[in-house]
Image (tube, rainbow, N blue to C red; front, side, top):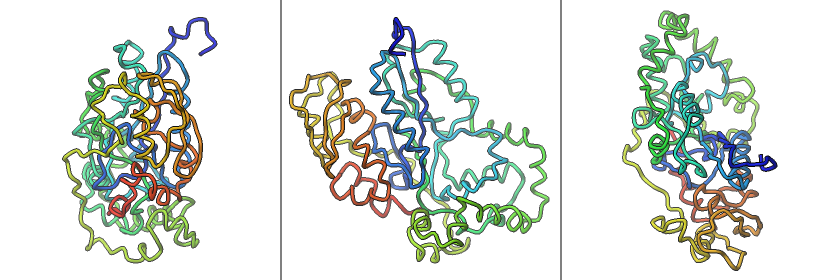
Length: 368
């Protein structure tokens, strides 16, 4: 695109993922663009999205935007038979969007958007009515299928207690203001999904023990299933998804399970600078404060005030040197590319990085 005669005539929209920000348990289940990028372990998909996002933000193209897509609710979800379902923590949250609204967003961008849309990174979410807990999603789907007690289909310990992804957004309404795309309610989308899967409406008549033992239990034992990790003695994976073998063994049955009730009041992580200062007024002093908040330093000496697109040189607390524009660091939450790839090292990084430490405490890791 840069090689075209007039790149300004071409606009590009990249699609990222909520997986870029990884596990966000209560009380840190609210988030926004600019929060730490912190991918769950084994999630190479999330890592590739971070790399692609940096490529686009730093591309030098005149008209671009990056959309961090949330979970898309569509009829095919009711038919998913993949071990990844065991990774969805019961206490986790997700701000979903319907497949129709997600498509409407892209079509609307192609039809024309305000000029201020370009050059931004946005969270794509359905808004208030789409902010569900993972347990609530299970209950809603089961209820729509006429299943009275979804717990009879599962054993509680089959579900990971950490290391997934998803949060509610404090800033998803901004995209709606720029490019109106929301029309669906979750109830309407769920109704359409059930109508599109008539065979599943017979689920209410299937004895629960059949679903539990002949469908779900084998699924949990497949490659990437949580019980497969336990069976095979993969202690690294067990620790990633449960904390430890002992923590897994300590999980109770359904009679000790309390449905999650995360706060509906938005909360915010600190980003290490005065966010009331407009980007056009950002200076080297602002960037040095941001670097210090992350345990690192700004290496570039002379910085042009208000230039947020030119990459600067930085050093993280562990001594890695890298380049990144102020826009990438302050607005999008990027930091050291080597450290973000070292997922097992996040707790150690947080000892020096106050920015990351906001999410690395015990309360931010355990769910359900």
